[in-house]
Image 1 (cartoon, rainbow, N blue to C red):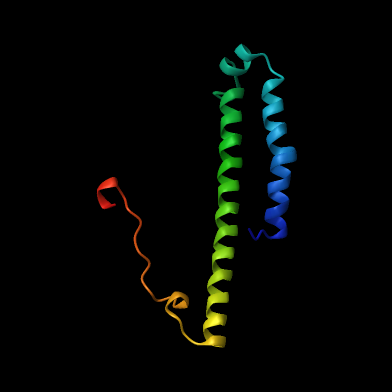
Image 2 (cartoon, helix red, strand yellow):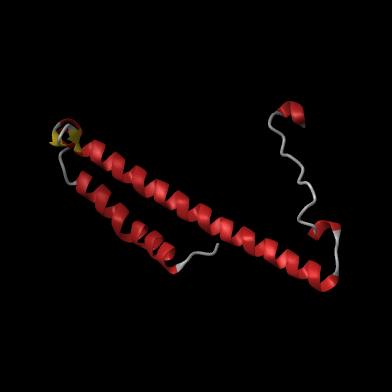
Length: 108
């Protein structure tokens, strides 16, 4: 998986700092107090933790998708290189239709 330096930093910081800090801050509070007492407007500590975890999760999903897209583009570029270097071949032809995956057991 190809990660840029900023994305790689974000992944490492999330695993080693951002996530542990969010969970640790919540766990240091008494459960009943954290889950029921509003601390930021109407939001409880539990609500704040859930928001932070959702933000971290969606950010990691975006980084994962970007890395996979970059790897897929590299594979396409390599196929075009091979095609130019060694001639056309059906398996390297990027315009060939890709069979659809079955959507249900009836399509099998």
